[in-house]
Image (cartoon, rainbow, N blue to C red; front, side, top):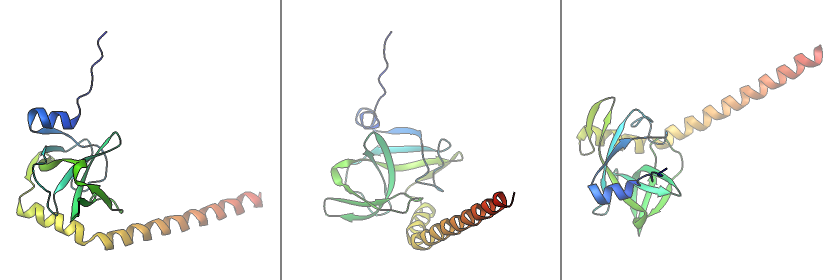
Length: 157
């Protein structure tokens, strides 16, 4: 029986000049929903700019995250739905998102409305992070109260 080797995205980019496929994961929510939306990736031909969405590898996983800033020799990058930054060397980035299909609608990454969205995601990061942390603390406090209530209820029996 013949084994079929999975093509790597970087091989597809090198051979075909474009990769079109589904997304997997939650790091680019709400822009890209896992297994629903389709991305169009092209090979990186020049240094990326702020707001570009870079494709790189982290171990065996492919990562598609937004460029927050250029750094010497690389980029400061974060997913739209993530709360920590990464410093990625220039040589690790091999693709860039140029367009995508969201709920069947075609969106170019040069579209003014899209760029406004991308800018807003970056500008509202601190506020969103605060509420995510606050929500986590509230959930934790509620869990503690429920556990105490359950323990007291069990000890009464």
